Picture 1 (spheres, rainbow, N blue to C red):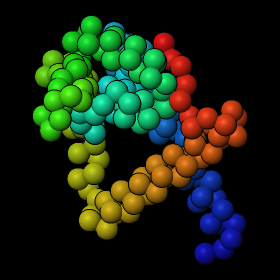
Picture 2 (spheres, helix red, strand yellow; picture 1 turned 45 degrees about the vertical axis):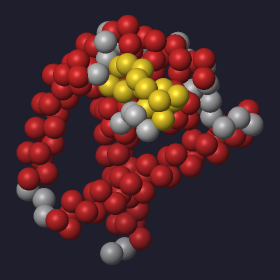
Picture 3 (tube, rainbow, N blue to C red; picture 1 turned 90 degrees about the vertical axis):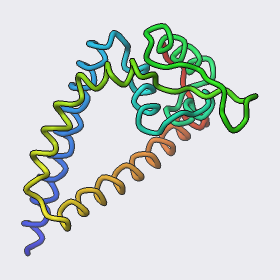
Picture 4 (cartoon, helix red, strand yellow; picture 1 turned 180 degrees about the horizontal axis):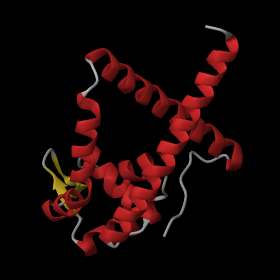
Length: 165
């Protein structure tokens, strides 16, 4: 393959990834609107739903929020019935934040069609293709995490914690 052909393929790949990111943001915006929450709350809700119960401090580190900001997010998610604070079964002195059954059900209404659509798209792919896509996404996620931390570190010397409302 010529260098020009490879450059064109890479440009097409980058364009496709950017189009995908924009489409995901649009859909997530729409889901947050439907759930009656803002995007910061939606991002925290998504992290909790994906990674499971965690302390407020852990959640703040995951999404880059200060302790005050993450407390406000948890309060709002509790108010909507999407999350709750609960004692850690392994250490009753520690409080965890977890998604409620109601929160999962509310999200499921909007995300189930996407899961079904993804299954249809992926059904035609073989194991090697699926592994390649998974590997690309894992490596891309790691690269983006590092890049965000580095940029935030250069901007203000902090580890990325910000206030959000």
